[in-house]
Length: 325
Ligand code: ACO
Image 1 (spheres, rainbow, N blue to C red):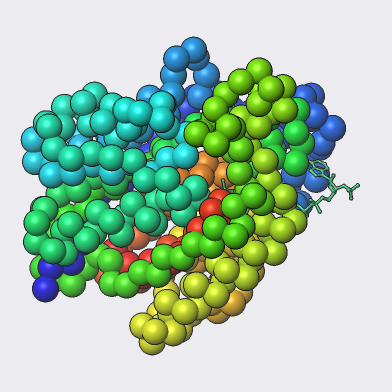
Image 2 (image 1 turned 90 degrees about the vertical axis):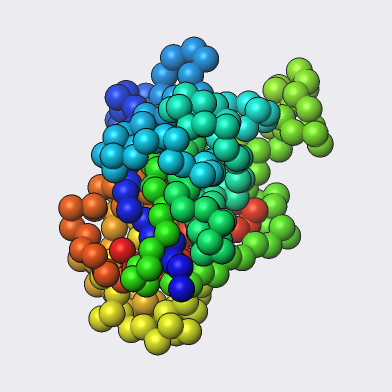
């Protein structure tokens, strides 16, 4: 049986840092509120005119190919998970593939908000498990600062910019993705939404004046849903694979709020030492949080480690993956 294994991971975050103290100068907030409610201390921000999400994704993919000694010509497919693409079209994946010298193979974007990386990873894995492709690059990248309203204290403290990329390769020893659960519920669409800019509300002076091109989030409603769904889906994948907390090497959760992560770990019976946590330094980078976690913790991972990846986000979308490293 062919499985899809992650054989390399690389992250990229821009140089500029926005601290909680910096935000307190923009809106009525403070370090104590942000830290205690979310766990976030700072986030990285991509600055510069004309610089979109691809700038960060290209750095991550270039680094990934170099570190895994992979010639771009070997790549069969590139998938980019993002909700802040450089443009609606062409796909950011097309721009990335061209910039890193991947030849004219398929490349496309997947939009599933904070669950984007899980959806992209499972999609890439299917091409490999079917035997069609040998090497697939999956990127999660978002420039959230481009759609965050820096006058809205309820959202601007949460998000940051970043990118993470993994190489998926065919494996014949049973390593890689073992199982996955992907879910969505469009009934929650209006709770977390960038209302304008798409075909429903193309940009006009009115949509701009209404600030509909920015993220709108009903924090408490999303929080309640996120806590139960992320915990439920992580428990479900453990149960059906006969795993207990002791069997898990690491929980790799989407980084939206430390309280949501703690609740998920608690439900899984996994101690804090086994929970990947990067929210304090990167904030919520949406599709990039999970690959950035894997990148940060790479040196602590051993072949065969059991990982549970879990995410929740706009859509609503949520899901989990059971992976052997
Ligand atoms: N600084 C100070 N006070 C603030 C801030 C701030 N930055 N933001 C809100 N407040 C105030 C509110 O106005 C409110 O004041 P009030 O009581 O006088 O009305 C009070 O703090 C409490 O606000 P809540 O919204 O109840 O705070 P809560 O504890 O729910 O935390 C948060 C807010 C952090 C947004 C939380 O609800 C959350 O994490 N939600 C889920 C986020 C999430 O998981 N999103 C999904 C992924 S993102 C994606 O997919 C793109």
